[in-house]
Image 1: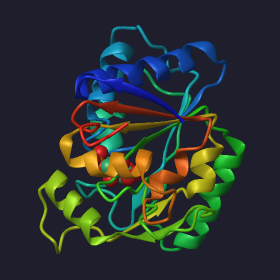
Image 2: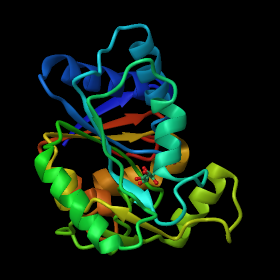
Image 3: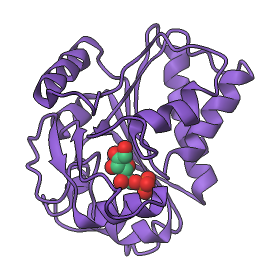
Length: 242
Ligand code: F6R
C-alpha cells in the first residue's frame, strides 16, 4: 500500500480526482468503479465540474459501482440515487456504459451472478473506496473472510447508524443489507484508492495502518497490497503514532 497524506477533505478529493483523471486520459477504454457516501461527494463535484468544462472526456469510460442496498431503488440512500443525483443527472456527457447492481431484483442471487459476469467482462482500472468507522470497505464488515467474493452482506449496527446520520433517516427506514463486491473483486482492480477524511475515521485509520492484519478490521487486509493507495487527511491521520 502507498499512503498519501493530505491536509483536508478538499485535498483528498482533488488528489483522488487527479489520479482518476489521469487514468481516464491515458486509457482507450477506462473502467472506473465508484463508491458512495460522504467521503466521495467532493470527488463527484470535481468530476461534474471538469466534465462540464470539457476538461474531462468520459465518452469512452465505463462507470460502475462497488455495492448497492437491497430494497426500493428510488430510496434516498441507494447507490443508484446517489450516482444519478451526484453525477449522471448533472453532466452534459454520457459515459460509454453505466453499470449498477439492481438491489430491487426479486432474485438477488441471479443479480449477483449477472454482476459478477459483468465484472469479468469489464476489468476495472480503478476501484474507489471509503472507509467505515469500524474498518469496513464496501459492505465487507468486521468478520468477513478475506477471500470473500460478491455477496449479500448484513450491516453492522455502526454502519446502520452511519447511514441514518448521512441520509437523515430513522432506524426503521434504514437499510440493513447490501450486495457488495468482496475483497477478491475489490483487489482485482488495477488500482484501488481508499479515501479517508475526518477525525471520526482516525481510530479506523490507526487500526488499518498500525494494528494487526485481521478480519476484525477489514481494510487492514489492504495494507500489504501493492495496488492500493490510501489518501488520508490530517484529521483522519491524527491518531497515527508512526
Ligand atoms: C458506500 C460504501 C461504504 C462507505 C463507508 C464510508 O458505497 O461502500 O463502505 O464507503 O461506509 O462511508 P462515508 O463515506 O459516508 O463515511
